[in-house]
Image (cartoon, rainbow, N blue to C red; front, side, top):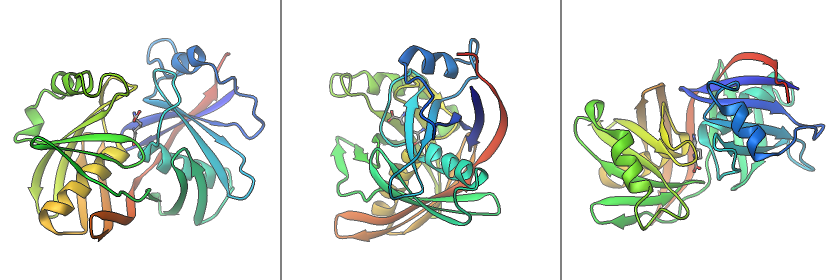
Length: 254
Ligand SMILES: N[C@@H](CCC[C@H](N)C(=O)O)C(=O)O
């Protein structure tokens, strides 16, 4: 079966055109495709499928082989893939697990409209919110030397989150206009180079504190940009923007 590999700021995905519904949605096959030693390797696997009224449908699996909630970088990568497949030229609308998304592509930069966010909860000095996937936000200093795996794994497996899991983001403010984010991802159970729904969550917490509406986000895999509109306690018109690149293509032996 033909596959493509995409990366969005280092968050990497096995991408499959499943418009003919030929891909076997089997946990162990997906897990093996994402395995970096026994398979192609990726933080997740994404299927592009037909949709009755929109341009396409996105089906996302974490590297543990389980279908999961929304993936922001994966959403940007599937927009680049749909553009490559000539499903649309500049602007698109597609369905993902959290609902309808809009997307745009120009000069290799992909913009994805995220779901509205209605609530940011305080958890002691930290925050919890859902940007299509559940996220925990902790602000730290000296993030470059922070033990993301150890601390992220402890929060993700704490009594509060152990059952459903959560993605854990550590955030350092660089300036009013720039933050640095590192993420421990649920379902990968490791730090990834970037997490789109995670940087979006970190940006919304930053907007609340700084009273701003746009921020540049540095991740281990590159830079992203988030903008949003605040309406009382909720955020709307949230856009995640950055590069999404096709890396190679090949054939998977199933
Ligand atoms: N890499 C993602 C997040 C993917 C989903 C996450 N692992 C979960 O299970 O919640 C992103 O870019 O948003």
